[in-house]
Length: 342
Image: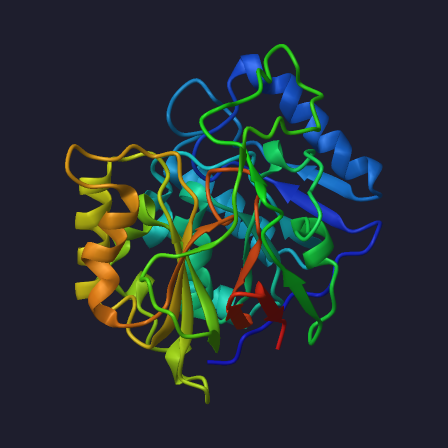
């Protein structure tokens, strides 16, 4: 599969904002407006979609959400799309998306995480269009700590460019700002410190390369075993290997264990040279921690499993480009991920 990278963002470009899953409740419109203005302050124009209703679990009927998302993805004037956040049922868009049209269209940066994994990961796997697993719109105003990059800066890199990220050593778990009363907050109140951890307890130095692919466990598991989550085409890269990243949003460790077993049995981890696991605030179970859940389901693969990576629901966010060439290094001296847009 040839990975196709969108043109780099430049000031004056149009960024589309739509809610393909959940919309924005009235109490958080202030935060939404602030985040949109942040994009404008950086020199971008914004195309605001109509699918924004936050009164239920979806922003609009499925046909309307799919039509608006397809319009933005196929419009050559729109250079990036970022939803306000994830949601619950983006999966209902699958049969309404024209993957053939996306495969032949000029690629557009499609950014997000959580339920947005349900969309961006299949789009990369089915069309070869690189997508960006990174902060949603509502999180974009937060200042990015050293050693990480914002999705806007990554989307501004040219094809063939590369960038390196590592753990900043701080995080914020199970604590959220009151956006209803403080819509303009831009600084995270870090409440924890820590770096990446070798979950599989291997002692050898890790230096592996592979195409990057992954996302949120709770949403991707519902696509496991379907054509929407098949990594076969991506594995046809001459290198033939993957670096897979996964992260748990909120469900208990036993459920995560079952989900990962199912994804493994469906072949999602086939060809992986290493697995990155996002730091999580999701609860442990009575007899199983989140880390133990990962090892129970994936430990038998015999590959490095690196935990506490900043690629999930616990800020800060380490953006990952689906389809990019990754080079993962983990040893006593260095722990970092290089991504190459080639």
